[in-house]
Image (cartoon, rainbow, N blue to C red):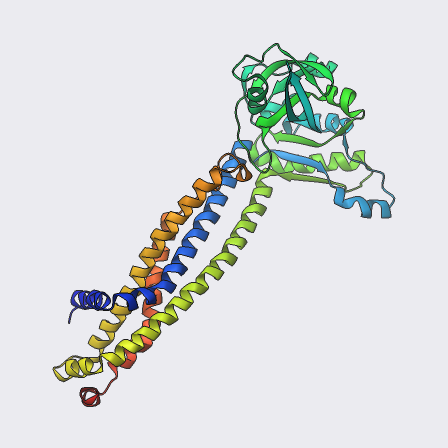
Length: 409
């Protein structure tokens, strides 16, 4: 009996015992389905994170104050309280950098325009902010150097904030009451979308000096963002920033100087580890499915003992019997794997659709991405489960004594 004929015999056997075959395949179906869903969601999350970081630019350097150092700082007598405008000005002088910007977050504030009220995040920003954050103006303009220096009462609105406040009307030149202070809108940003738990579209941007003098009452900064001339100069630029901060703050290591690329690497490592953990749990279902296949194949060997004896009596070799039963078990697992892949794909698409209907996962929802290598791997793995767990039943069938098998009742 050739390989193709053995395949048809295997399929005919599955058709003869439909319910038994389906119940046997359930373990493989659920195992492959779980693996497909897990791999697709993990790969989708990885792709989404990479896409978000590519929007921002992997060479952007983030300078922040590290509050986790507070206890150790107090123990050693340090007095550092955070980033300040003095730090910003010193970092701006570094020749390794081509653009430096700062941000002061002031929390949620109420905006009022002709009786329409909107809650939005008020953020003070410096020059070069659009460059380092990779933002563009959709309407109007950004603050000019004089307006930034004088801390004028001007606003640049995020896309969603502008739509909520003005609808389809033109916001440019309109006066808005911001937390009790009258300010004029001069620009609206292009829609950006939510990413990493925040949405620039829902923000309101004002000159940094206005944020510090009129709302903050101090010169503290939330974050400083910098860009080197080239990506290759990033390590040198980070070292220069760190040395500057240490010089200004008496060598108190209370700051973090990171790049988006290093943060991306850390996040992808966590995603990969999480994916391996979930994949291992899902793989247990495949193990259970394989044990089920082995059990049913052993039953099949017992049921077909006389058939095996007859085939050996007319000249069938051991490897013929072995091949036939291996093909049957592999066929059982492969069909189950294909069904599991189809169900996994459908469930993944359903999860992606459902997540887009909810605001909990941002505008783009959970991304479902199932790469070709994962499909090929799932197919081969399900087939290998059939081969591995069908090996013992096939070996047992191949080694039956033909005389004993013919006498079996």
